[in-house]
Image: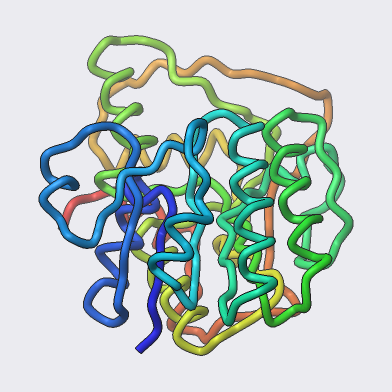
Length: 271
């Protein structure tokens, strides 16, 4: 059985991945802040990337697949990933790195595909590119780069924030001329499950197969949530339409693992 370690399993995406994978693989996770639930769980290990060397945990656990879904200080994350890369070079193990559509945020005229050149204007995007570039120096069977757009779903932080802003009658920031794609947390975890189970390799774009304006998507999600008369703050960061979308072309997943914008919108309603 594959032994999976999720580094950052107490975060939203990491924890959703743990819940998806735990029944199928020998799955472990790390958490940072003191938490009685994680402390009692024999499969969770406390890890502070700013103070500890992840190699010690890796030597003890010997995972065959590592998923990184870390948050926090960028320099500490870079250091942690460098240590993980050094470890997997010497062991029968591979890394699934949760990356972001922001690695393409300086491109604006078209959607981005898996093997397009990355270029970012943002600190966040450039940080993700650094880790991606380090991974791409490895043999291809040693890594998966999973580029993820905005993630929605009934329990996601983005949806909770929309509800909170609406309740406070505070403005919801929208970008009327930014064209994006999105995904749901449930579909994302299924996709990562498939990638691990089938030992897939390379770069995957895990967004919806169709595109939508950011303003339209947020409006439709507010409608689905029955948020009456939301207040929108429209932000124009350019005069022209701008794309921030990651579409699959080379590494397409099976039809049942693809998602449409409408399914993303539907996912915000708790079942």
